[in-house]
Image (tube, rainbow, N blue to C red; front, side, top):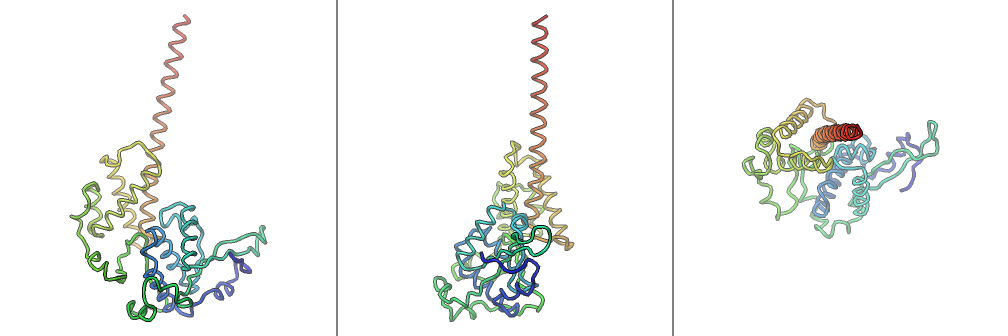
Length: 294
């Protein structure tokens, strides 16, 4: 990564961008997703879309910390760093590390700056997926407002439809209602989510809860009614934040964080119970030893 002069020099950031307006940026984002989404993981696509959402104020340039991206996407910081390396290898983004010019740690590294790469600068980058001459024709989109970039949300939970990427996936774009959700997903959760999402997105949301459960390593039963009820309340809280405009990141990331806190609390209760049992056994052993000595 090449350092840029200052972590507070907006002019330097603007000079990094290859775009002059949001239309050019949005076209570049669509081209990158069309060319690479089939070879990226779901989390990698989510990270790229997150960067794209934040590359609006300074067109093509985003300022994000790894910890912030990890929290919003619902993964670890180390996973985000690996994803960033993958996006760089595919020439979807460039990454610059700033140098601090203010404060007590002048000269040290500041925050990272992520720049969306203009794919039209290297037409060969698109050859493995489509013919460059037809790229614009196959990605016709409604005109965006001047102060609005493409609206993305992690894990395909956006309420806006994305363009069909190729004819092979045309059948997959048909929405399935909540009755198609796999039976291992608790009915109580499906009932709460089905007014807002189709079967695929309900399944993906429940998978977020499962990921949080596995991350904490609690011994509790995920399908226990009390736990499912707590997860449903976490989902309702996330929907409230989204519908009232209070949600700054993605709903999927917020929901994952809420589920993680649920299982952290359960895990702590398990530790407390284990400690109490251990102390009880120690007291019994001490009493037995005292009676034997008598």
